[in-house]
Length: 130
Image 1 (cartoon, rainbow, N blue to C red):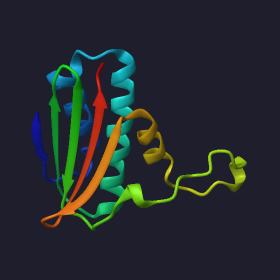
Image 2 (cartoon, one colour; image 1 turned 120 degrees about the vertical axis):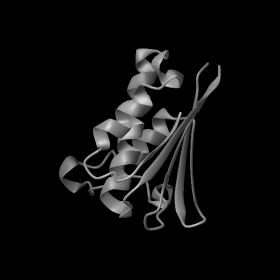
Image 3 (cartoon, rainbow, N blue to C red; image 1 turned 30 degrees about the horizontal axis):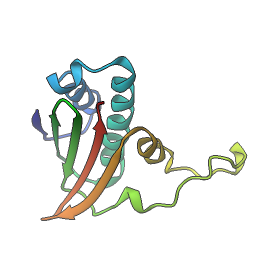
Image 4 (cartoon, rainbow, N blue to C red; image 1 turned 180 degrees about the vertical axis):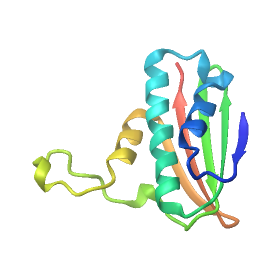
């Protein structure tokens, strides 16, 4: 599946559902679908809230053993993987806001990659399926 959403404002649920309903994801276990939904939602929210882009391209490629989801947007260059890990052991009232969603993605996916190419943010998530 490859789809461009332009504009993206107010379409977060539609974008997430398009990923979740594509054939590459539909047949997966409920546990995997939960992890994928959480990570797709986190990445999409970051794009909506911070990039300033009015559009996003989302592609999903799957095989029998790997699922790859790629987000591209035209927003401000920003590598969410470069932020320091949140201190999940700190008392709740001492924790800083931000970073927990990407931290969870790092825990749930097998690899995450970010690069800026041709004026686009490119964020890739890979999940091994077996």
